[in-house]
Length: 278
Image 1 (cartoon, rainbow, N blue to C red):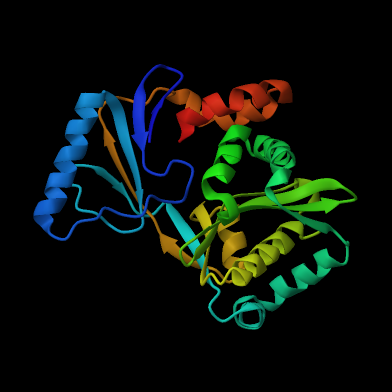
Image 2 (cartoon, one colour; image 1 turned 90 degrees about the vertical axis):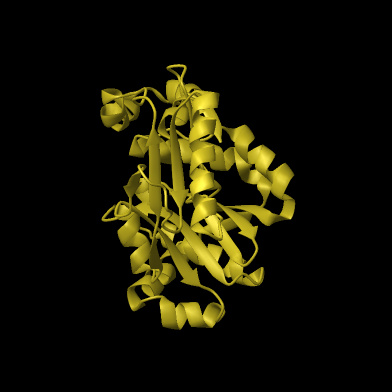
């Protein structure tokens, strides 16, 4: 996807809001060389400052920056059904966390009419993390494109959204590119219950793999997903830098700055700054 940054530069990213763009498709090394040449010529023609590829497998992109030890995605095998996931994949601690959350009688709401509530919840949670979030029209347009293959799940406490996710169903996979939970409800294990409900929804749709999305090695989300019993799968990042990135030093300090800005500013400016961080 091509996008223009706030500084006016163009850059291209594969699957910018998802875990990965799959992989380069080629059957011989000669074809791989031609793909690389085409990408680099397209970069020159379009005036891209850089190309950023997120791939599930290593690719023969000679001369490109290759990062293989920073990000991974997580998978849970759903083929055995609910009982298998509950007893064979979930650890005892995870099962106890689900039971703990169920005692609070949170209510589960499913349906894409909950998009406005989900986006508001995501803004609150992402601001706490120092990150902008996608605009509401992205999710509205996604429902038009994916129809029944997309579903929003919201956990509520007395009518107030406290945790939510978007599920996408494609082939044998169910994936959740976005999942958030209010920090005050982490001790209630609301996020663990949300993932369990997501797993059950995937199994009801006869999916065999739950893709829990991208995490940095050693991060809090990495540890959380691993505790669920999910298996990490490395992601390969390739960068072809034609010109220096636009935000420079600001990108390093961006999370701290974003956390301190008033909410009315981050709600308006978030989608624009997101382009810089894709």
